[in-house]
Length: 150
Image 1 (spheres, rainbow, N blue to C red):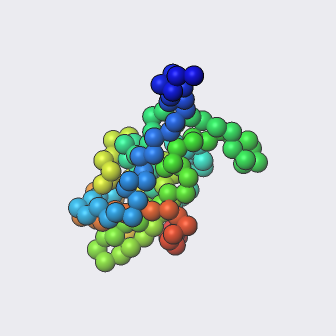
Image 2: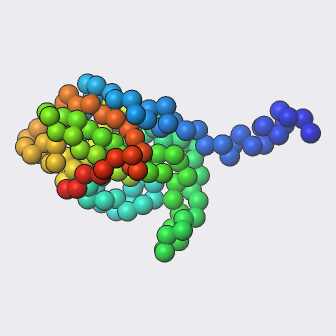
Image 3: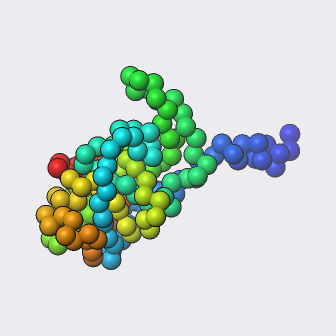
């Protein structure tokens, strides 16, 4: 069989890994905001009250929804961003790490949208700040760090 033909058949099923090149590379001059996190996030998982929505540019638009092993059998997005990725944020001498379980379509890679509770961990002034910056943003696997509690 022609290898180009085979590649053309398989190409639609390959998920681009857009997050791995960003892992463990601190991004200085970043920022974070907050939103009312609730319901299910872009990965199909329940959004935690202490979590992060990351740039839509880190998600693969061709990622497929696949059945999960969760008790309710829901479908989840088969995207590397949805597989144990956390965001570590350093701001004003504080460092906190939150799981990435949602997408922020309008955010750049150096901008993270946190749940309100997560935002308050780093910036107690809350809504009076609006956009907190400058911050250092680092994407990493959750199993390589300690996740902050809210």
